[in-house]
Image 1 (cartoon, one colour):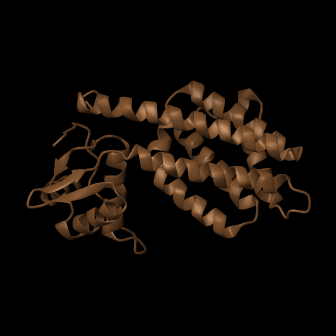
Image 2: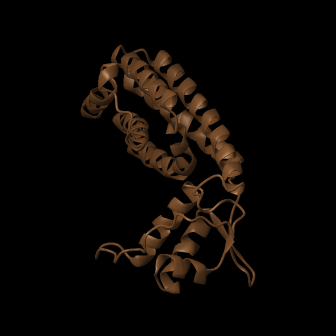
Image 3: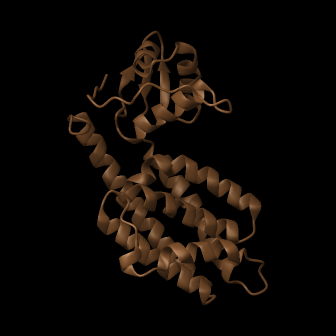
Length: 241
């Protein structure tokens, strides 16, 4: 099993509305996202129980949930294994995301279309700011970026499309967050989001859709490159040491 000296704190008692299994699930998902658990790593329920300070029951429940989502697999009589990243599936999800977001861009610019202007105003307040007021907090910008794309789809007024888009967003989050590990990518995100919002303000649907497509394609390529590099570093012991 891939080991690291940086261990998370024991899982705290869960609030009434959250089960211990939920806490374990989120911690293990973070371990995968942060490459504390690397694709190919093998482990047992007892190892996870000991590391997180919980019983095996919530660990097993969390692992079955992660198995359903395609993060881990159970091995016959030998514990569990972290599955390799399925880049083909991620690319299919990015394709689906692109279709929904470019469709939303056209709807936001169409005459007579009912648009949630409040959502757009909130986006403008975050992204259309002077360079000196931009955030350099990678975690914050990553969160804002996700909300930017979800809000664009939601503002277009199709609740079912917004729901499916949020599901896709959740499924690609594990690799998408890596797009904000460099300041240059943060700067580019601000610039690209600003151009998209300005195109929508001017009701230029084709331009907004084109800018969105280029923005998503660039992010997708960057994320794949960084993910492969991070996995390589983790396997070589370059992370968490």
